[in-house]
Image 1 (cartoon, helix red, strand yellow):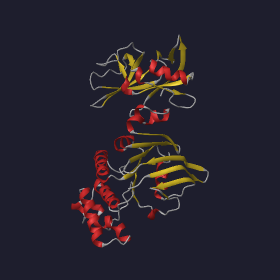
Image 2 (cartoon, rainbow, N blue to C red):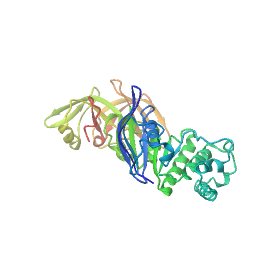
Image 3 (cartoon, one colour):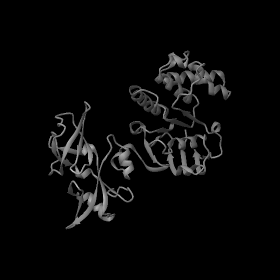
Image 4 (tube, rainbow, N blue to C red):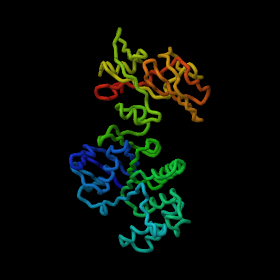
Length: 368
């Protein structure tokens, strides 16, 4: 396996910049996920690594080799696509063996690799079937097997689970994670699904508009977002935001909005004083909001009153949708007990130690 390194990579399609000055490193044996909304440049980045698109500017290395001008077949990578790309007239065995046959690998070596990969993926009993006789999950395993037999330096995955139903996606995520640990393969996985990214990735590369927003491990990305985009994209439901101003009174920093005013904890205010901005956005995760209706609330005074708009009872948790007097809507995630009634007006509490303050000018998290 090999280390993958991108240095100041840009890709332009005429006047459109699809990937803008992107730099990152995926270490040997690491599982990295490129995450972002549709059109953010994540698939284009993967195609640049694979050699399916040519770099406009910058350098791509696989191991110590610069591969900008190396054709895809000579980069020793294996790619797994969203649509499986299996030959319908071939058996599972022949689909998995086809690439090796094209490379003139000896017949006994092909047989050994195919049967070994099929056993790893638990599809050894399906080798004589054709794709039309397989379920979606089984077809995806065949596509994975075709990649595994190559013994590539790098595995590239382009939203491989998107065509599966929800239950099968959960199952295949677990299978992919186990497969990565077993093969210790260098892997780069593209997805728009943050759940896939959070559960699979050792490292997440979050992109938007062709630009990397943050590179971090999943928990750091969730708890320490560098800007408002990261905070809003990571988390389901997303972080709640309130627009307002910072005011300094008697050495204390106070956040003031049309609906509430709170004194910020010393841990946060000490950071804000070094990067003070008046117009800011107050961010708080749904799980850090409680009401007087909840069994457990923060040991502090209520921040404001809000009206319950809607209640989603999901079994393992409850999502409560609130509306403030000024019309701002926000969501609280609470344990699945004692749901409030729609239309009720409740006192609301915040875990202030866990909030984030973002610059309204730049979107940057100035409370880190």
